[in-house]
Image 1: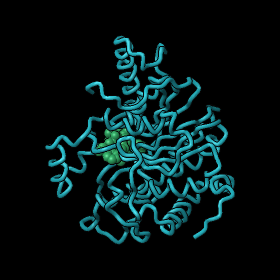
Image 2 (image 1 turned 120 degrees about the vertical axis):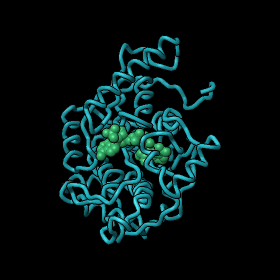
Image 3 (image 1 turned 60 degrees about the vertical axis):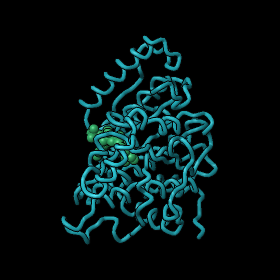
Image 4 (image 1 turned 45 degrees about the horizontal axis):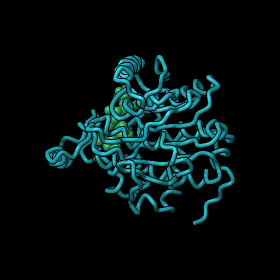
Length: 330
Ligand SMILES: NC(=O)c1ccc[n+]([C@@H]2O[C@H](COP(=O)([O-])OP(=O)(O)OC[C@H]3O[C@@H](n4cnc5c(N)ncnc54)[C@H](OP(=O)(O)O)[C@@H]3O)[C@@H](O)[C@H]2O)c1
């Protein structure tokens, strides 16, 4: 990395608990590894136990290599404290199973990183009847957050929800009537637009949640990791976006998955960001979101629709905790 300082090297308490979705590969892998190397307890919530076990093994090997280099930036733990919990975001039941499993541990939760995601996808519906990108990238993360917030609220100071979004949110508008895309056919369905919109929903969620968390110890931020060479990026290689990608790569515009993790790691661990909310980071610096993402009327529509989609999974207590004393003004 040419000695470039990518994120502050801090020591995290071994009591600090971080849950990251999709920590087995790509951006999530490096995020989980580095946060664990700073000392925290990290849970990677993934679809495949086999992939997760393999990832944890690799993290430990790389940790020992860092230690052998005499790096002061990594903790003096013998072994990383990383564990696996099963999560498939295409199933709301799977989200609830993870919530129950997490609650059963009795652990606190300080940082929740909603990182898992899929890229351009064909028109497909989950077992819950939702458009795939809408559910995997946004809705399941919303459900997970709603259920884990009560734990975070009682976990002490400086708790953070981090939504790994994308600059792609900037190029789409919010269309409530198109969220499920049922009016499209296989050939008219545009997976790219649905991906971009799923990333827009996350930023809208950030603003809506922060209004409800304003006086609490929990903050919500979002970010764009950059154009990062991962499996997800390859789903953009076709058509118009593919041409744009080739140009970007040609001018050295893409990042490795380690570099792509820097903004997330910074958002999760930088002590200067305690209490910071409603910020969308790019290259670890606050950046501008689209006017559409800031549109409060559309944020409210999305919030109401989201609760409707999740009504079978949100008890009155959870809704009460989610809404707090908040009353929406126009
Ligand atoms: N790469 C980029 O250029 C870029 C740009 C902007 C934003 N982002 C965002 O960065 C985040 C991480 O993406 P990445 O680039 O690191 O991609 P990646 O390497 O493909 O990793 C995606 C992760 O999400 C997991 N995942 C996919 N579907 C899932 C599901 N149904 N349930 C649970 N986990 C699931 C994957 O698990 P499996 O291994 O089981 O598939 C994997 O761990 C995404 O939210 C993406 O939108 C990426």
